[in-house]
Each structure stands twice: as structure tokens, then as C-alpha cells.
Amino acid sequence: MTGNHVIASERSERGNLRHDTGTTMDLNIQNCKICPRECGANRTKTQGACGADEHMRVAKIMLHRYEEPPISGTKGSGAIFFCGCSLRCGYCQNAEISRGKIAGEIYSPSRLAAAALQLQSAGAHNINLITAGHYLPRVKEFLSIAKPKLHIPVVYNSSGYEKAEAIHELSGLVDIYLPDYKYVSADAAQKYSAAADYPEIAEKAIAEMVAQTGEYKEKDGLAVKGTVIRHLVLPSLSKDGVLIMQRISALFPAARVSVMSQYTPSFNRTGYGELNRKVTAMEYNRVLRAAQQLNLDGFMQSRDSASDFYTPEF
Image (cartoon, rainbow, N blue to C red; front, side):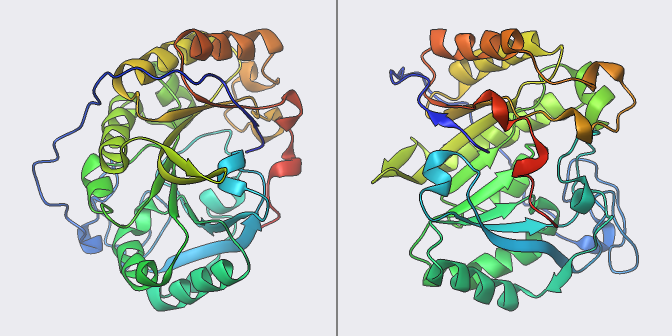
């Protein structure tokens, strides 16, 4: 993410929606129902719908300088890129690792905790867990080891396609949530990500995130607490983007918003021709204006962010 601050600064005092989970999360990977797909795979013997087996696999660990400014700061975010993903976006810029072309390296929770502490020693402003949800049991164990030794925030970077119950399991372990809110349309969610239930699933997950973290806070220009909701504007879907800004304003006033223009058509593998172009300035500005008119505070991107330059070499 490469962006510029600020969209707006006024905030309203409306309350936040919280999803009441009501049940204890089942973390059994032998009949895996951790993600919304509930594939039921025995991940000790095979891969789940997410592409993951029983092992926690990591593709890359690095100082990442292309997140939102208060996440990357001046020294970089301590990014940990996990392999696999429960969502199936046909335009994913990290498809090499999300769709299994790169298997990654197996990490135990203790080994990953050591890597996180090395990132902290290297000057990382935070520990940024990128697409970690399908490894929830091991991620919880990793964080229980690392968190007491960290003096920097933990960021949980998510597609938004996660059960609210799963997010509830991370309460007290995550300081900053960085979820996507991709679609308000079930038809678009099914067409481009094979997940018609995405809108309702993501809204409940984000509600839990915002309830855990409360008002977004920065210290010395760096994020320390809160939720930043990302929306990637897609070609021909700017009207949906406007509706998403309205939903964020109504339901999640404590959060910040990040309006992204970085959609890169070279990653399109959906087969749908409408995604074979970049987002126009008119489309992006329509969503950005909606955020401004709603007094949403947050971040925007420069037009040159629509490039594979910002995707790490895996």
C-alpha cells in the first residue's frame, strides 16, 4: 500500500455494530471449519480449501515500506507473508503464495516468534501478519509466545473473509486490524472471489475487529491501536465503493478508511474482460469523494500505485 494522508478529520459519535459470537470457536483442523468455507478437510492428511495443511507456511519475512504511512513509517512494517488464503480473488497480486504456486517454508510458533523479535530488533514499527487466518491455532500460539516480548504493535492484515468467532479468538493479541472490505454486492463477490457470502461475513468480522480495538490512535505519526478498513476500487464497481463508504460511516465510525487505487490488471485471471484495465480517475475519485463527504478519516493512494512494482518478490 502506498498512500497519502488525509481524507478528512471530523468524526461522528455514532456507535459501532458488534457481532455477538455466542459460541466458542472450533479450532480442530482434522475437520476444519476455521474459515467461512467450512470445508471440513482433515488438514493433517490433506489441504483445506485455503490451500493449507497442518503446517504453518510462510513465504517471506521482510521490512515492508508500502503499507499506509502510519503502518510503514520510516523504517518499514515487519511483514510476515503467509501462504494460502481462504478467499479466491481472481485478481490477487499475491497469487504466487495465496494460490499455492509457492509452498513457502514451514515455521513452528516458536520459530516464528523468534523471527518477529528479529524484525523488532531490525527497527520494524510493527509486526504485520498478512493473510494468517487459516493458521489460527498456530498463530494464537505464536502470538502468545511473542506478544509479551514485543514493544511494537501487532497488525493483523486480512481479506475480511473470516468468521467473527475466529477474530474473537485474537482478542488481546492484536493491536491493529487491517481488513479489506471488498464487496457490498454478493454477485460481484461470487463473480470475482467465489464467495457470495463475502459482504455479510466481512461486515461481521470487521464489527468484531472494531469492537476489540476501539478508536484508532497514532503516536508520533505511527499507528498504535485501532482498525483501518481498506477498499480496493475495482473497474466498473465504483458505485459499490460508494455504498461501502456509506456502510463504514454508518457502522464503523471508530475506524479509519483506506481508499485504494492500486488495482493492477496484469494480475487478472478471472476471465472477465472488464478487469483488464486500470481504474479510471473518475471511478477512483467517485469513491474518494464519497469518503470525504461522509467525513471519513483515513488514506488515499496516488494513481501510480497501480503497478506490480509494489508487490514483493516471493
